[in-house]
Image (spheres, helix red, strand yellow):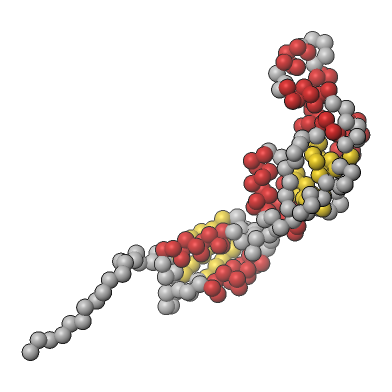
Length: 230
């Protein structure tokens, strides 16, 4: 069974309103050692996120005053120049925010983070209200499962649903999250499906397919009965 965002998210989340100041946000990020903060409207819905990168444009401009200022400001995109001039969360934040739902799988959340290049995702309910936050480190917690737990899940939830060639039962061994599967599936398709199911068990780092290759199907055919002719 896939691990869900609600299983790894943090529910104690620091948030700010739209009128939070640049100085206050920067101080809190530094003090709390976090990389981003969700911005909420008056109804408690997530409307944006202020991250370290949203604050860096102002730092770049400030450092560019005097010698080289034109060169530094000239390489910043327009939206970053706007952020550099911003003084409140409303204008600093990236919006709309990338978010996750509590029932999303950790794999889905990881794909969002990877593709959008973000370090944290606010977790919202169906009404868009904040209920938690999940970080890259939280998602990596899935790899903290013991080898024994991984093997037990495979043996109790996957193998019992699989038929196999007589005298070819499935076996699994796990070492440091690397799973080795042996046995004799009935078809090539079953073999593929079995490995895919094992690969998606939480905590699995890699799968070594040591299954016996099934005989390729010859298709369907009719066998004519042979009868002797008097």
